Image (cartoon, rainbow, N blue to C red; front, top):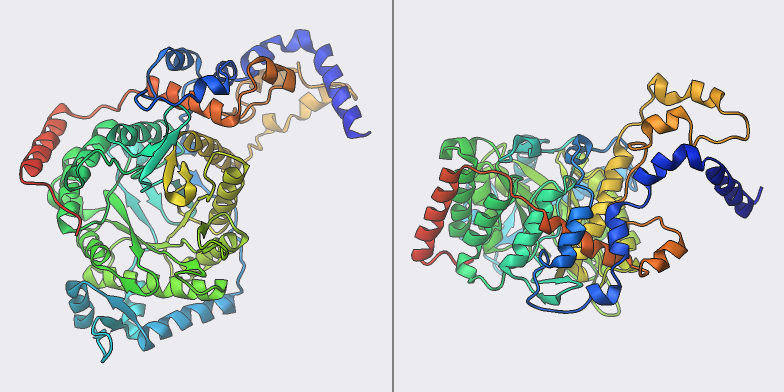
Length: 563
């Protein structure tokens, strides 16, 4: 039977079963969000008005009233990858790469720009300086091995709401949204510099969608003075969310301020804060082979406080790393080992994560390229290296595209698939990343959430209980019949399959009748509806008042500038 004939048979059976499945089609047809969005033409949604807030207006209110509530189920909040990681390297190649990295650190080392970090390493047995570079540090093999032996293979980051605690390691998977872009964009207001209002809207979205497991600095609020930015944004995160908080490692004073706001929000003493992880940061090694001053400060401060450091070299093959994938992986491993060794020298047992961001540049333009075959293989190989030395793995979902188009979807899916195939425990930049990291897109964040929810559903185990095997249901339906109106179907129709957040399964006639909305248009309506109905999680008023007092005190003192 050809494909057209198969479709015709299914349609005929569906029509024949109409009486028995009216309840199914009424409840399970196109989701109310999709139906509402479909009536919004792209030209109407896409008008640019710089001052129009995303979450206000009659259109957003109408969508909010009709949209389905956000998903909130355990397998979205705590994702576990049941599949065995892929392998692109043999065990011998992994061992050779690791031994080569250890040997390189002993023979050639890396440059460490912070004198305190250099002194800590030298006191532990490293050697510093030569005739040409006094800040070059060489690491003896036994120092590296001791650091790896001390580093934990798992850790848990405490959230203000224990339901959102992050388990990092093993087969756990945590999706973090986009972090760091100076610009943000949406169909209503267009592309513009990041603002505090935009930052807070990203916090609201992150809090709402359970498949996003931690807050992230989704965009830089450039309307806040840089010396106060860390205070204002951390206060916003504490007030609007009860998920774990990200801390920028931009100097000792900034880190200390942020730790204090988080400690107050969590309601713990300083000793309790330092006794277990309550936040995390990402350390970017200044590839090739350089730990700069702010990143070194970050490693030391986080290690001393017992907070999570993700050590991530910025190894783009062809630019900051060798053009060969093997060479880029070697440099990545060298830099991770050096950063981990510094952390463990400061405090043995400090929680650290192996950060992998190896991709490549476009050799014609020099621009970063993401979602490439090389990035996929690099993510899988990085997983092998992380497991070889017993560390959790951080990877990424990223895209080079400038808009929410097919390229953006393919590249993000390719990168995320590589991360998950490599056994990543943390997938950063997994929702909203655009323009190679220069812009955070509201629509792409929701489109990526759709993808992440589908991954989480894919990881959920297949229910093989006897009723689900449907032995009797199959016997009840005559050969050549259908299951549309069977009792087995009617008992399960409202929970049988994944229900899309954004994607549409309308036929073309329905789609045209409702204005031919693109996925970006539908995503925009989901964003606006979500923000319209957002309610922040409760926080003790005394804690919030204490945070405000601290922020006011530090603001009066001038805040803190990045080092």
